[in-house]
Image (cartoon, rainbow, N blue to C red; front, side):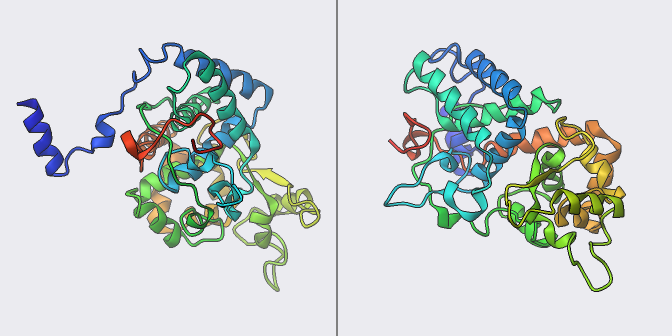
Amino acid sequence: MALILFSLLFFLGLVNPSESRLSVNYYQKSCPRFSQIMQDTITNKQITSPTTAAATLRLFFHDCFIEGCDASVLVSSTPFNDAERDADMNLSLPGDGFDVVVRAKTALELACPGVVSCADILAVATRDLVTMVGGPFYKVPLGRRDGLVSRANRVEGNLPRPTMSISQIISIFAVRGFSVQEMVALSGAHTIGFSHCKEFSSGIYNYSRSSQSNPSYNPRFAEGLRKACSDYQKNPTLSVFNDIMTPNKFDNMYFQNLPKGLGLLATDHTMATDPRTRQFTDLYAKNQSAFFEAFGRAMEKLGLYGIKTGRRGEIRRRCDALN
């Protein structure tokens, strides 16, 4: 009877067969030390490199938005294929995110070879690191398989750019089933991490005939940014924290900064003024609990986007190469 009911629900489109195979206890029997190995790995990495949490969170976003959460962003290019990680938008992805996944995969392959997917490792590492730096805990169902495709030409236009309009960014999220509120909540990830100077240079240098910087910036903040980024054309690695107040703590300070003119990117300023998004940026600035709850729900939803199960994926032996 239960099988008939499931078949009926599946036929009606009410059950996603991929999601139905996921479980928070997926590795309980096949890799009993999974959680402990993950925790040990990310703790050691975050202590050694405090930027790891932000790097991994960004890597997870870039992975899920292209092909779904299937670790396709981890694959290296070959002479026969330009992979996602070599697309222009992904060249600035910090190495710490890749490194923590490689470390976890190496340890897990020793404990339970051929069992744990790189996609699950990235999803759990992201959640645990967010929690470690003060963010909310949320559930991560496991059982994803690693994708079989990774192509650089699928990236452009499918990831938000700082130069895009709010309408364009809303559209990118909408086609993946995310509401405006979920988009704003996920943008709160900017509470940790940094952005390269070139991503906001047009807003602080020679903005107009009458103003050196975009009037949306706090004048003293803009002046500080010009000093910090003065050599960015010769040194493209120069960067600034997204949240200058509490850059290494996952909190709602990013949203509190926006009405003060302390947003870093052009999209930050627009999100704080556009009527479609402002109601949510204001809410999250006033209420950190509301932000954490919305962020956690949105991350759970994102983690299920485009996942691969069964023959649609594989368990890679190495995260940077297809089997």
